[in-house]
Each structure stands twice: as C-alpha cells, then as structure tokens.
Amino acid sequence: MSSHPRQTQDQHLDQSEWNQAVRGESELQAVYLVTLVLAATSAALLIGPVGYHRTVFRQRLKAQLVATGHRYAIAGLVLLLLALVGGEHLAASFVIGAWATLLAAALAALFATLWFVVPLVHLVQRRRT
Image (cartoon, one colour):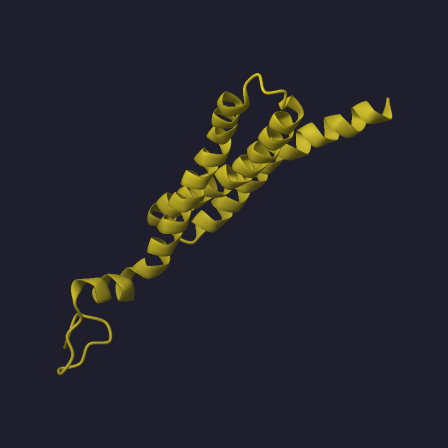
C-alpha cells in the first residue's frame, strides 16, 4: 500500500504535488504571494508622498500635495491592513490550523477600528459640536 495520497502503482507524485496534496500548499502559496504584493504596494503608497513632496517642493502645489498624500495614505493603510492580516493568517495556519481565519478576522477588525472607525467617530463628534 502506498503512503502517497492519490497514488496508484502506475502513478508517482513529485515533491510539489505531494506538498499540494498533503498540505494544501497551493492555497498557502497564493496567500503568500498576495500578501507580499499587498505589502509592497502599501509601502509604495505610504512612502509615495515623500517623493511627491520632494518633486513639487516650492512649486505652489500644496493643495494637490495634501490631497494626493491623503489618498495615498488611506489606500496604503488599507493595503497594509490586508498585508498584515494575510501574513498573520499564513503564519498562524501552520500553528493553529483553521482557527487562523478567526484570528485574522479579529485582527482585521482591530486594525480597522483603531485606524479608521475611531478617527471617523471623533470626526463626526467634532462636526456636531
């Protein structure tokens, strides 16, 4: 009897196929790649206003700089949130299995609350007074 899943006498799984069959690595590889892309894009967006500022310094483009920097920062924070949650999910899935999804969701809620909900609540409260 063979120890390899889905292996017959005429079929042999290579290491990559074995990893995918036993550990579901293709899904984890996708999470890893997406997480890396999200982190890189987040860094570009969060660092972008610095380059923008250096390029337009003393060119009377302050309003455009502030508006663009604000949009970049919000988008960068959203992507950073997704990258952090994806990275946590990837690492935790090796340790706690399916519970990693619950942990990732809890962290996403925490980040969203601290980074977006609390400031928006304070903004709404300030506008009412």
